[in-house]
Length: 156
Image (cartoon, rainbow, N blue to C red; front, top):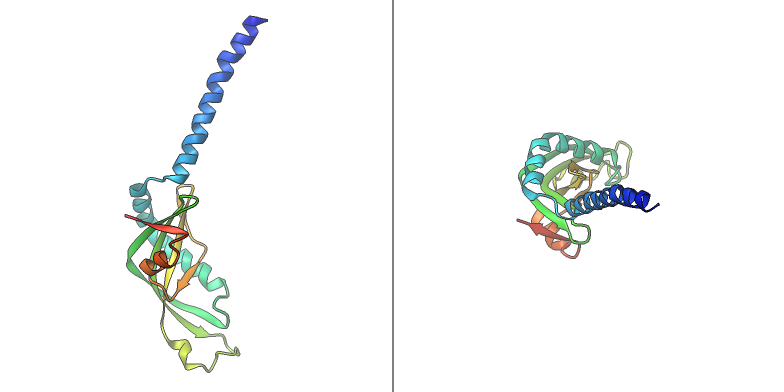
């Protein structure tokens, strides 16, 4: 009986320790991702991410009564970390051109043609950069970090 308990604990204890270590490493990596690797991955995937951002933003229906025509991305990227979760965000300044939806309330509004400044938001989830098409209008990346300073902090 004691030998069975000893064998079970000799097998089970290391397995539990290895599983606990694996979970801790995974949790730690989510809270403290490798910044340099995240930057490199973002730059490698940037063209695809920009296209994905535009597609999702254009499909979002926001702002109402406007269609996304073009989105020009700035070269500079600002990185920030969510203060609660540690999740990394990449913020890129964009200039967006809209047109009014045909037959909509803004169809004859001359201001629709004005270019709009915003910040495109990208998120690092499980070591993969993603976007949901979220744009922070009337803010450049530095202003966005400042505006949402309770929620995120700049990463150097």
